[in-house]
Image (tube, rainbow, N blue to C red):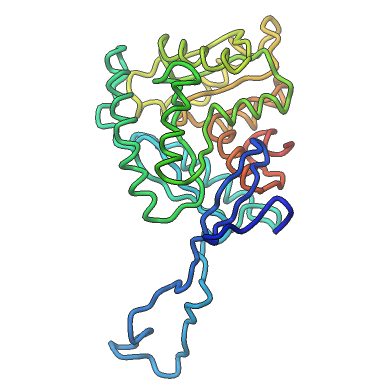
Length: 318
């Protein structure tokens, strides 16, 4: 424990977010008895195991896999990319200054009609996601996460920072836990590099890209160029091939004409960490993928400060 941490009267830990400067309450989830064992305790062939000894639950044993931090991750039910990318970052960084003991508990938000062909489809998708978010939170809280990560490009369905922040504030009040959100994370990441002129790449159509541009402009950035793959189904976003993402970055975004400070990718179901690792040395500017950046924000806010490999220069450098 350091000067930025204290224990409140409930035994929860209060830390200061390293990027936001906000107070973050981290609940103590290993309150004894943990694990609670039913009498007579450890059994062998249906009877109390003699001479086995006792698992002293008064210790409050931690979660074996998530003993340093347990994150709750919320993704649309069609998303097959974000959890995979976050776990890959965890598994690639298991060293002494890495992420051993960090775990994810993923909750799906039901989006049973993932068609995105029309503006009406988009509004229905918005209704489903926001309508199902609290139910997903109820499920996730059963696993006692300590901090939450929003695994959705909310700017796809919500226009403007005020609209983006409203449901996050509502869930923070409801759950008692803090969020890592894309709009906060990308602002912090771009500010680290002093970036102002950006190009964005998304799986969105024209309307979704307009919402995304509105978010970045309200955050104080100039969107010089934008590319949207116009995916007509949320599930299909994960199937956009890496060569197409690379072509968009090299030919339409990070070219000499645009003079960008950074490339930014929205859409959590569109994997980018391999593309970022490959192209950042080529284009000479950071390539910010939503999944890596949002996880970076969550980790730094929670005091994980070590350099991390395998997910782009931001996680190595800041």
